[in-house]
Image (cartoon, rainbow, N blue to C red; front, side):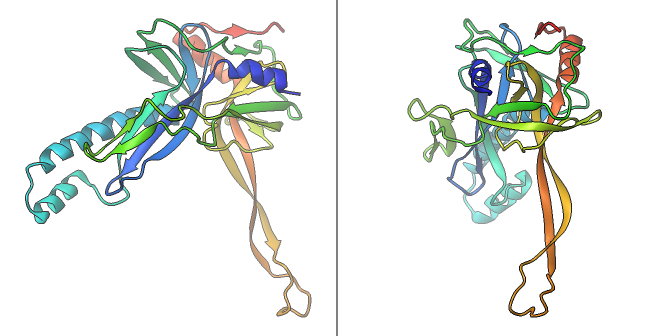
Length: 288
């Protein structure tokens, strides 16, 4: 049902790969998010919580560099403890984070992010590139088109991290990208039915989005983008009975725990296109 649409949308959907390290650990932790391009001018949409990571990464890395500079002049453990307290470093605290955009543009001098004031939505514009590395771009429904409960839609993203082109450089006490290894993660689609259209929250889906789907496009079987995956809602269904055990000879079930429905939450194309118009960004729409 979605095979052709997935092939089409995959052409302009890309992973945002992140590596991080916590204080006192040499282990590198990897994760991904998703963005997709809305035109051929290297302008892409993702979630606001993804662009917040980008800003946080720069701040974390600068602070850790300052910490390492001061650490070089320390000779006693008591001084190191005082320095750790100054920077707020304890075991498990994230101290380094680095992010790369995979197969978006051939090179860049930087990028700019604009965040929606209310919704979990952001625009990224790449600068200083010579060539785009994606194919095609998103096309949105016309203004008169409304997503309805019962519509079958699909999302794609990068939830199952497979890239390994990174390492911990012990000599430099740094995490870094490497020219070898697997640079990306296979794209993963997940379909579902629209359960509710919530004016304040957007489109609710019968299936959840997974970590790594954040920022990925929601689309129909024609490949028209109707939304963007932002979160998974966990709605309680009430208590449910535990299994009847031998210690309960009367056969009365014991009620324990709660059942939970995991539902995808997506921003609608109406909000997306309004945001793009406000930013003066070119985008395409399908005819009614």
